[in-house]
Picture (cartoon, rainbow, N blue to C red):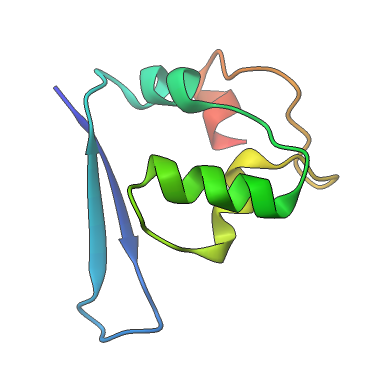
Length: 84
């Protein structure tokens, strides 16, 4: 089984979508494996760009950089953690 990440870019044509496949059995397994906080927004974006093989999107910092609205200090253990 695999986990897919699909991102539709609003900067390009309406059909512009990016798909990445990860060899994990569940979304939770994927999140546990790749979760890593970074101290700066720039470093979080760079990690996301590497993880998603070149997909350059400024919003990666929301996944890998802690901020007040959605603090996350531990590796996800449940789907509720992944959602948060």
